[in-house]
Image (cartoon, rainbow, N blue to C red; front, side, top):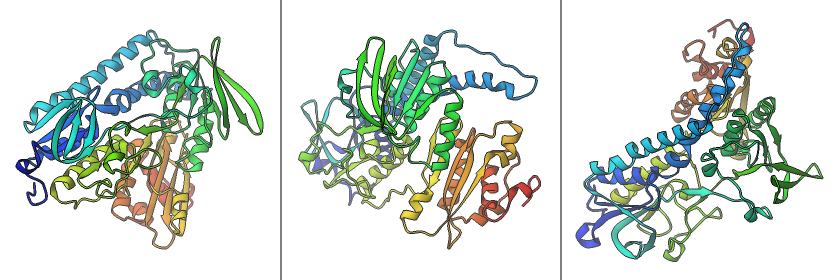
Length: 476
């Protein structure tokens, strides 16, 4: 720790750093600071561990994988001579197993870590920012620097009647011990897409609706293809609509929408809201302390994780950007290092991979074609259907595509976007290529293992200049 940059405890109170929030970002900041030799106050409010382990990544991916086993058994008939049968015997047992996993990881990765760091003091309570530190349930916690890492919660859309309807969120949906016959999912982002498919695969009649298109942040080719795959699985997918109002009816809920200039009503037993996340910035004294908030209620920060108030930093979902647990931990680590050592670490999301755990999985890194064009770049793209990837042919599952975005002048890879059953485990190769400035030619000349999904990146790179259907196996 650089004493010239970090205030001493004698001059500034008991703690060098106060971290508000006990999720992934909060723990990352606290551990990083502790390893620097700082005295840290880690302030939690509610269940320790934050969104990811408790109500986000861990429970959702566990249930998604459980639902996938049902689908794979039913899809086994794509291989001649094989017929699979599977059923849910006890949904309560599935939920109980999920809860056990969450509890064990929360204990192992959060609660049990605290005793290992003597210079971290865990405090429980509602926190407000004050001059010279933080106030926790009315008691002052003096600190030389502060990091706000309070996460986010489900955002509720302003649809007339929504406040009077008993809706589910991603949190409460994973607690259901009985499956509804039908479910209406409002929101076509990654949360809505994942949850909708999961419930459809366990036998619920699912309708998913959204204002624009499915996964609007990804490439349109991927959005269109995934929409088709959802429909093939029996889901109703309605995009490009406007919400009129929602109300309770005798057997559930009814959402009135306008679609293609006509009104229609969608009924379901339950409704689940998946229209994004809202940063937890209320009732913390942020604006009163001179901290500027963004229109999405996130804390405005610069590339050093600094807020608009000197000595106060922010990281994770509370900033309203890059809402992935690994980016929260990354940003919080930088915030702690900057708070204690002079603001010399820059946040860089250029090679940030993102995955949506639908099936096929959606994985992307770098710029989309539209984003590159908006930056004024001359763009070249290639789109490779999975039917040209040997791994997909051998698995008899050619759902998906790979799209690469390159700089038309330098040939440098700008973005990679994969829709494939095993796409998530392939995207990191593209992330490394972008991080280290590789060109499409570099990717096309690299040696890849045969019969892997990641080999599709090589084939997609070759597609810029070749017809890969005319190449033999492993050629090029």
